[in-house]
Amino acid sequence: MKLFVDTANLAEIEALVPLGIIDGVTTNPSLISKQGADMAETIKAICSIVKGPVSAEVTATEFSKMLEEGKYLASLAKNVAVKVPLTVDGLKTCRALREQGTMVNVTLCFSAAQALLAAKAEATFISPFVGRLDDIGEKGMDLIDDIVVMYENYGFDTEVLVASVRTKQHIIDAAVIGAHVATLPPKVIYDLYEHPLTDKGLK
Ligand code: G3P
Image (spheres, rainbow, N blue to C red):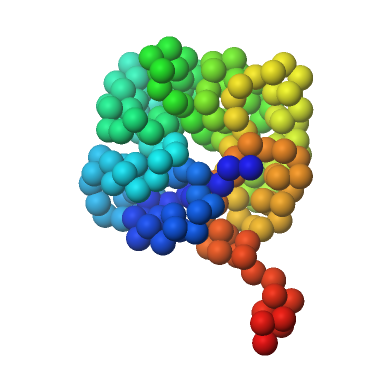
């Protein structure tokens, strides 16, 4: 299972990379604006620290503007995966960018039907948000299960990237199901190392 870190904070990324467990990074406009730094410079800096895919999200919602923005983001570094929302225009943009060889992460996925459409649009990654589904009383992990089975049934190449991860249990469940990737806030990554019996044994 690949582990991505969900942050735009360079210091957090620099601290995590030497641990040898980080395969990529996901960002979004809110994470970048929290840093108060220039968006393009931040994406370039992250791409120079991490060799794997770095998701950079478009802010436009209309196809031609999204495509233009996506092309610009892809020009910043070879390992940029352009993040687009799961909308009609977003999936149209996904297909157009994929035809140019750009990696695309389709975000804001909340149903298996949406995930099927993203795979047909040849998304590199589909990002179902488990935490936000849990928040509204649904079982986010059931969606991961459905998408993994559905993609296996048809041999789709799109990788299931579990997003909106809040807990260690989310990662365990996603790995048992066989999701390809999970993106974690730094705090959850450090939580994975922890066990009270390890601390007790050390003492
Ligand atoms: O991975 C998506 C993430 O940035 C959103 O997480 O916790 O705001 O639902 P959250």
